[in-house]
Image (cartoon, rainbow over all chains, first blue to last red; front, side, top):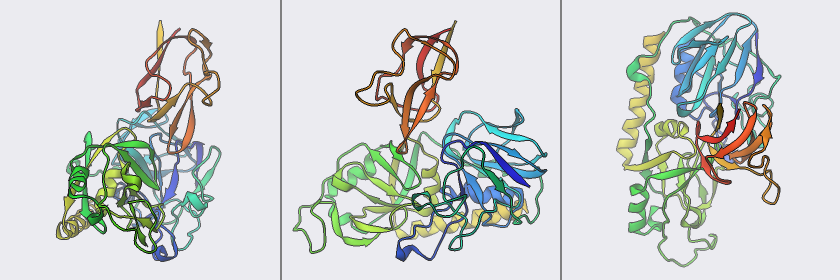
Length: 323
Length: 79
């Protein structure tokens, strides 16, 4: 039982929940950028949580299935077809041997996910099947899919079944301006109060430099409080003495073009962290594309923790409803 | 009859393979289906934009180095 890749789409990779426990030695977690779409996909096809799925961006892959199976397309708003016939997204669909899944032009969001009963079977590296392309590790050969690849399916299927559908209320919508909730800190004191305000007042535009490593934005210039360069810090006003970077943290080298670090990013360095996008909203970020606008909304730690608990409860409820 | 070539990904559109090269297609040139008419740079990679019909280049809707989004009209062909 396998999947034949006829067209890889764009930077389509094998991803799971991520590779944890090695951050301190410089391993970012990788894993599905839109964790909600990924988890719901596995629940729809009846996989154990954590089964590996496919993540694409902007362009979906064209995939032929060599045996009967069950799949679900989640994430971005994108038309999907099986042998040319439209199939619903956010719903598990039966696939017959020999059928080909293809995608049309994306109309909302940025990243479609394909979950397959059993999961994608690639060797787990440091406990994860996620692809970390920068060092060529994990996933399928440590790289994005290519035409002619043949993916093997795994045995993570618990109860594969077609016709499971995510309730409409739980299907995410992708508004014109994404709002990302931000826990301000660790080094927000380095920005002038005006600039910190400007950061949350600006509708930032996603630049073409926006991938699994990070998203770079344009829209305003930010100023740092003048200071004496501390021991161990670089000379850029945005520099601090080296520290660990939280996944989702925001830095502004030179005061222009803020960068949100994502699941494939460097794990530490010497740029001031203005704040960190709450983990739940990295899902929304993952569904924004170059040219889209994004606003950052400040929340406090209690709100951030509530947002995380609410998402965990929502996923539990969805898994129960779909079981 | 006309045909419009649209962007399949967002990014920066280039009419030339490199800054000091000639454009892939000159105004008024004839292209065959599958001919490269430009590049879109996104996520630090360049993807070729190919003509999905044959025709004669009539009107450009974007300039060299413009940022484009998915589905944006790039160029009209007279077919």
